[in-house]
Image (cartoon, rainbow, N blue to C red):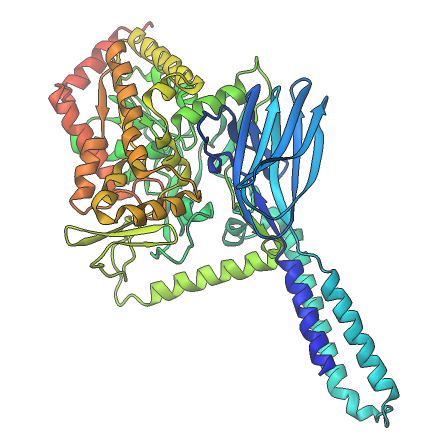
Length: 627
């Protein structure tokens, strides 16, 4: 019995070591309470890892929701721009309790014990401070289990030493030695496999490397390159395949991967000599230049399903795609100047994405606008909670194999080959009779179909801000400046600039929740979707849902820029039962790209911009080109 107890305690010790966890503190999970948070979140590549950074305002307080019933440890590196004072405090039912106050004169590593907390952990500062990778580390004390194990082992040894007939024939020990040998062999094999996978490093298969992305590890992607002018951008002349199974909401850890199931998508991926998703042979002039981010380059879809390609098919005009995932207004301005304007397009359409274009404008200014300072590569938000076992490469191998097995089983279950539907829908899913919410995924019956969708918290959080708050922000001023310069450049070349407003998924789908859930159930679902126990009320989000739409519309009206807001049309399509975004991703599926192209084609027709008109305008523009 003592041997069994010792084995159980040993297993518990190993389990405790494996389950020690890191809880990262992200700014988007720390909404302002009665005040405007002026700090900014960014994710930078430092070495081979993503480093979350919070850039504080000269005086600000950021409070992160924390619910940890056991003691933990705050770990953060604070880098002041000059002398600064920082405070770390707990906010709970007992009020505000100060844990530490420090004056910083240079980079400082802060390690601070935090008692059990169900409330908020506040980082406050006077003087600008960069908080590098703030996180809570939780590891329960192993001392009680070690003491218990020592007593059990001592008792076991004593019992064997002093009982009659303690000395046993050698043959009776064989099962024990066999078990120990098997255990040691398994351990050695595990360690060898782990070491081999670590040595493989960047040469790991993509299906293993993809599992490491959620840990904030950077894996080389031959499709991308670092550019001192643009930051991260697509490389020129790429000829490869794109393959994905889970959307960005899953990859960032906000949605369990098993809730949305579809076959893995695999399609050819190529870039032209300039590094954009156009056929390599598509040189010469174009009638329309399309600028934008991931909604324009459509990396989750074959290039022929992107809105620029579908617009060309519908109208017969020549459309060239200059979109690149991650680009913001300033990078789109650079692409216009460097690549589009030399071809003298009569019409330039910029797709403004409401989800993150303002943030991208500020990020680019921070990273690239310091008088020629070295480029800083942009990273991504990764899993918020990472256990120690997550970091083992063997675990990534197991997860990758499980994913590939599920994909193979799903493919094998199909009775006959079918055309690939790039809609993200579960081919085995059934329509539900009642609205459901499951761990971040909404499933609502709409016009006889079930719409399944999840929100990316960052974009849903963007609906907190009023028109006045957005208009007063630095990111809006940067965006306005970039668009004004775009208009001037296009006009100088004899063309016209137009703006197409691309709403976030939350802006389009949020109205569906109005009648689907009772107020209490709706509020609980939003709190879960935002991973925030104090998420704003549904009514508050709805009140500001179209604030950015109106701000951009009024700006374009003042500047004389033609403006198309896709939001009303997409709302009607969704209300009719058509999913326009991938259920587990923040981007359009094939139907969404098609809807955008159709709306744009109708808009061009109403404005008299037919193929003939655009071709004639292009001819006039090129005839005026200096020889």
